[in-house]
Length: 509
Length: 79
Image (cartoon, rainbow over all chains, first blue to last red; front, side, top):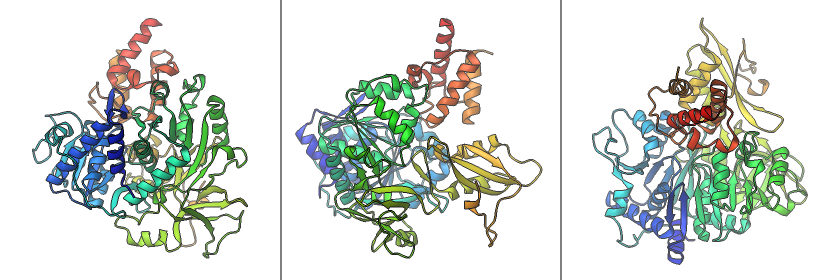
């Protein structure tokens, strides 16, 4: 097992001047990325960060965040890339939950960070990813260190020797949790390595590849692309703007060869206003789609615009990184399938009583073998229920056909997939209950004929002045990531109840 | 009401934040998401009676209060 930061050292030795990361006008060569991250590692070590500690990153997409990320890994600590869509409450939760020893922040996220900690910041060491900004000061009056200074001060001291075990924690990835706050999934060095190597083999990645990254590095799919680019000595294009015009320009101008994105990204690009469908993309070699089932209408249109492109459908959860992929040649033969297991993975379909489903029968998708996380951070009970002796119980429902191809049909645990993100309705409902005048709230999924799923809040109000739809959405917008904000709001006199007087989610439409 | 005042009021309403630095990138800073982009487009088109072409839907034109004002004023001159 070679840790991903050693893959970077290897690629930097082989092709030092090659472009590793491109973000707008900023270009990072392999040697700049490698040397910068060595400096970050030495800086962190000098400040007492050690093997097993957690270090956060909270930023808009940038080239600099990749220097911080590899620097953290090289120091022996684990990185926690915090979802840049988080607002104050989620940010505070994550920082407290994993006990960050240090954090890297860029200017764009300073506003939220400062608002989260108006008096005392619990993180000892704060580093600015942006250029020197004297106006930024910490609640304790100190000015944060800057990445630029660190790269200068700790330059050219050689490699930092670190001791690592394959099962050491490399990262904690936070996803929506039913407790009302995000929960952390532990990812080890072994998992990052195995998932990167196998995924690159399946996709046939080479040093010629220029992969565009459109989601924040707080999502496993984006991490997978970063590490794949580094493994093969290719280039990662960090795309900040997801506005149609910018994406089309980047795909063409950066000569992008591979895109890994969720169906919602493609749906946006196929919007009537988008210039995407009238253009051609001769550099684009493959598209991989993950996150939710791709509606046939979306796929048909994409294939018409990108006739020479290979399409890979993929399925995975953050708990097990990568589970299955559908080879491009099977796209028509196995329509709607998420494909066959990655090497080292075994997929079973299990009934509620624990027995195996025969082909064709729908049950819980259980992932065994490679890529399985050791569990949730600080959640022993949930870990025991999900990560069992006979595999990871994904919470997804599916079936396999006679040939062993997987078809994902939905969720078993009430989580909703919207815009490719897993959302716990409880997390949104907790936020709705904070609004004055709401006595009952339930959040359900609404799927349109195109397969796009959005959230609907169904509310019962008491009191004289009930909130408006606008008030409800505004409240959520100020507190939740955008994909958790209900698109529609419906007021009712009462909600259906179960015999134990709980709101019956399944009876609400 | 001039273009700048109208844009500032709309962005303040959309983001629920007063006194946003007019040069700040609204998308990168998390004030707006890509989902808001379509709402922003229809606001600009209906308020200023211009139509925005697909290629123009970019951060350069719509990313900050300053760039929106610049874009709208440019488009109105052409109209």
